Length: 328
Ligand code: SF4
Image (cartoon, rainbow, N blue to C red):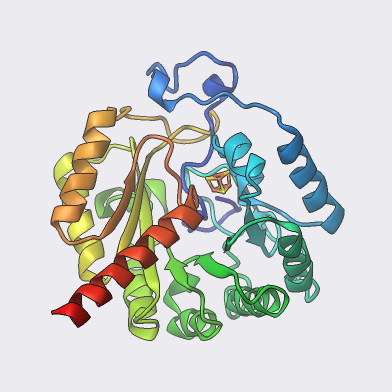
């Protein structure tokens, strides 16, 4: 996602970028043609335009726009937006991410949590997703801003459920604890790719560190949903993906998103392969067989795509399990 000189960024909503080819309605990312199942037309709707105006009026940023998510028309038309905290400039430079990279100009805005809560109060949604740029320049990596925003939202709309998609906080467990103390219903941190590709895809990030963040979230929030996600199309093998799913399950992850990497620009990593829809389905089945209860796997799946529905499905499944246990 974003930033300048340093290293790997935890990119909030990985692979959200629609390739320039897709925007033109043609194809060819690197040497590969964009297949039909990876294309989505960018339609303007009245609802999406109104949401954009509302964000602008409040000085808020969304990962939907910053990462050029291909699902924006659909999500925004339903009022589903993923708020990006702490500005639009990331201190890392992941090579797949469209978010701007550099040295953030500002300290956290103490009014931002209130502005987000005010925006959320206008939306007809039941579930809110927050993410942020990497802020390695801040002592807590921005964890307190997540916590303050969760609390501000809860004070305005206590009935809403909440989801955070956090950076790795450089492995700082105290930062993870700060976020968990504000009681998100879903704690998401994306591993983005298989461990072998980290140096190329997420320079400066560490797979083990990301796994620790997930395990720590699971430990601190045993009743919450712990979620992660990654992209296909960066050079991974099927065997590596299956091993990755096993590692995520081992860390306590119970919801996984798998989507196709789409190259945001010619300055980003090329797509090595477009995975077929049947392969996404097979990986979902594999993940479930490994014990991951909830899996969304398709080319245009992104971390926060259908997040509300996903969370409600998990909650319903858990409630059904509890009833079954009581009945037995
Ligand atoms: S999938 Fe997520 S990032 Fe993309 S438009 Fe929807 S809410 Fe925004």
